[in-house]
Image (cartoon, rainbow, N blue to C red; front, side):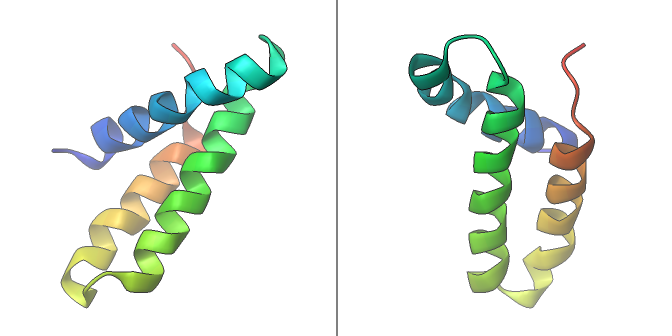
Length: 67
């Protein structure tokens, strides 16, 4: 899986939870924040060989905009 695809997948896994709590306002930003927290935890606990992939995922999440 490409980092860009994984970033989108993570954002949209959190989207329903934040939408339920907040309605439509700022849902994408909140979902991105949740996904970034998850990736930071993964980076703290993953093998060195996987870190470049997760760093790229993190960058993709930070730059993600709904198209």
